[in-house]
Length: 169
Image (tube, rainbow, N blue to C red):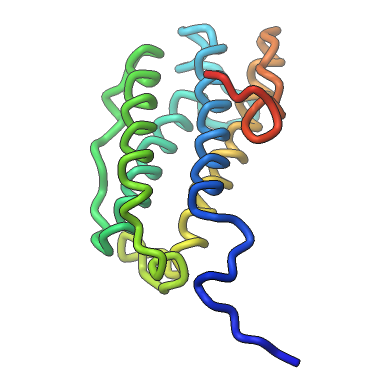
């Protein structure tokens, strides 16, 4: 017998999903902070981009995507290209974290299932658009772990994030 799913049939609540995402973001923040300043902007392996460039990418994508989900308006956010110090990156990261907490509750429930075309390029239900942002950060954070180990720097434990670890920032 096939049943129809309703908006009330959820595996994870929006609040739990936000906590999960912010846990990943807290871990990424600790990774950024672990980099020596000069290596954050210059070190790479195998033709991959320096971690500062990856961080700028995260910053360029996260808040504009969430804002697009909330409003249906897909406009680019503030550029992160001019962030040229670790302090600049971390300050912007913290500002974006507050913006995410502020915008998240304004996303209407129907928008998670509604198909949209983000930034005129990527089409899919809202939840898949946000999952891409989270998965992209996780993927590139893995590169950051490799970089830190190659530099002889002990990275933060990958499992130390809510709901599994302390998740402290």
